[in-house]
Image (cartoon, rainbow, N blue to C red; front, side):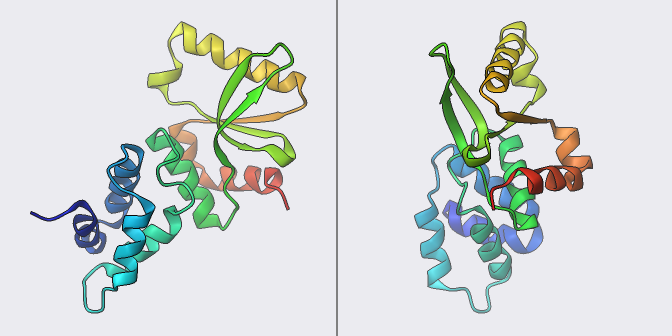
Length: 171
C-alpha cells in the first residue's frame, strides 16, 4: 500500500493543485506532519515525475500546514505565499476590554490587523452571524482593522486580497 506522502508525490505531476489541497487537508486532520514532508524532500527525487512540484508545494506550506481549520484558510495562505507576503499568525486569540476571548482566523498583531475568512457553511447561522459582528465590534474598539474574505473574493480577485495585505503586513 502506498503511503500518503508518496501518493502526494505521485499526484504532484498530474494534479499539482489537487495535491496541494490534499496536503492541506491531511495536515488539518493531523494525518501528515511537516517533518514527514521534509524527510521525503530530503530523501530526494531525482528522476521521479512530479517531485519538483511536490517539493515546491511542501516549501510553500511549511508555515501553515496543520495550523489552519478550513480549505478557505488554506486558500488565503496560498495566495499570500505565492505573492511572497509574510503569513499572519493563524488562529490568533485576543481578549477584549470586557474579558471576552475571540479567535481570529489570521492576524498581524503588530499592525493590529485581523483577517476573517467567512465560509457560508460556518458563518450563516444566526449565532455565528451575531458572534462575528460582536468580534468585529470588539476589535474596532481596540483599534484593529478587520478584513473579511469569502470564497468568491479569494478565487475571483486574489489581486485585491494581495493589495490589501500588502498594506496590512508588517515591514
